[in-house]
Image: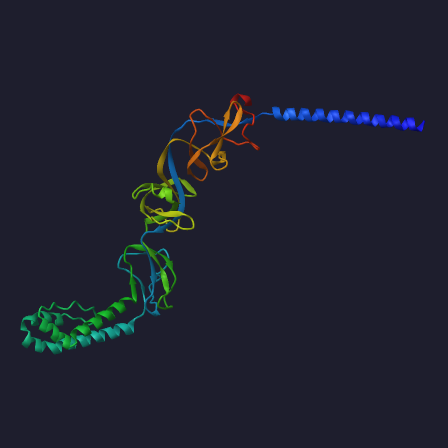
Length: 374
């Protein structure tokens, strides 16, 4: 009796197993069928080819075209200036920017001029006798010497003998020694070469200045240059004098017109980019501002501008044909930060504008219609 029961249980188990396998197989078939029959809704754009302008966008920092870094060539104490040598202070051309105490140097120079005056006086008697035709000019020069001011240029000498005579009396050597001392004295005072603004100040009155020390930075305002980097291929399509639109990050509603002033024809070995310089004039711009530049380089015929997100494998897009995705190789003519200009498509192609997860060639899809949302 026990054997009969065991046999019956075994038969029941076998039958149940077979039935379970059939049900699982049917379930898989149904799942597979559903998977195959699943259709994904996608978004597309009907391709309309046209001439697409190519714009180059880059950024850089504004820098004054005329910027003078001030360094000292002498040593001494900076003289009081009434607080003028400060950042943001404007100076007119020729106005003293900074002065270093040079009383001793100036006193020595006055003494040298006085000695030179005595030297000329001593040779005038011989000149009257031997070179009377030249005497009048040299006598006038002697009477106009002011030991407190710079020496004027010596009178011209047409006679070679007179020139040798003056050389033998050390007139020329003394004169040029004085001119050299005058040049050195001028280094104790730095004057503005043009109307401008002091944008950096590193010293204060009363401090001792040393040779080679940076004193500050002086610029001519309103005249700036922006350096941007572009690919070598694009740089060849740009021209000097070409218009450029400039804007500031936080003020895209405001724009300035600039022009390409110069281009560096060499290529950076690391970035493979070339430098392009854009000149702009404005009272509202400041040295050191970060700006964006937009330049129209050229135009691509029979092209389309798309989002870079529709590209895959660098040079392919998806098209929809007969409710199925197909891969389409294209040519990328230009890439911006978010967009790309491409060619290789035909008018009327249904371009996939959003790639769904797991997209592949042959995938069954349906194109989204506006009426579906109603």
